[in-house]
Image (cartoon, helix red, strand yellow):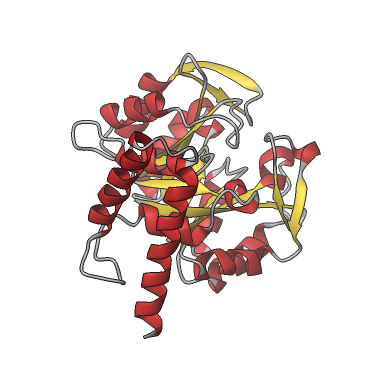
Length: 298
């Protein structure tokens, strides 16, 4: 599973949105490019950049900044926010965006999105904000579309969407768990990669996403941001946890084997009546980080 680090850009600054409301935006960094480069240096596989001015105000002042960001980092960047026209898609692809994320447009302008999927194969990600009853919300959660998860997934899969980014309407990512049922439903309906876009509370949630299995299909990626800023875990810890494929740098084990071992250890802690299981698992994760760092430096 790939780890995507989110960079929200508002008025040229990196910000955090506690509840998705621009009026509550918390400024984090006057240098979004430096912030993005920092995520990458700490282990992010890809970047998910959201242009909040374009999304909420149809103001594209951040586009030159985003183009510079794409040119600066050495990982793939997918760009979201206010992408509502073929010209915007063309501009972002020409600027080097790996993928372009479209949400409201996929519901309200389906023919255009079908055409874009044909013109830019493998480049258009459909973002879906899913309500408790699986109705899709649009325009930054402010409108109920009257369309539901299954039908939209089938339509956009047929259109040729490269992937689906699924988030939950109205969920506080720092307080409520991911909607594994909605993500599992998505895995069961489409064959395209599925990205968990709503964030997680802690490493246990991240571990649950890693273990989600629907007929042999798994989540392809997870987007994190505010969790790291809030100190719930580090990018390094998350990168180690989601990197289930390949061999762990600190020894002759695969990432999947280490993940299974941590799960067994967590179970043993619970059976022993340990009160703070999360802390115990956190110690193990940090120990593995130490092993990996020592192997690289040695």
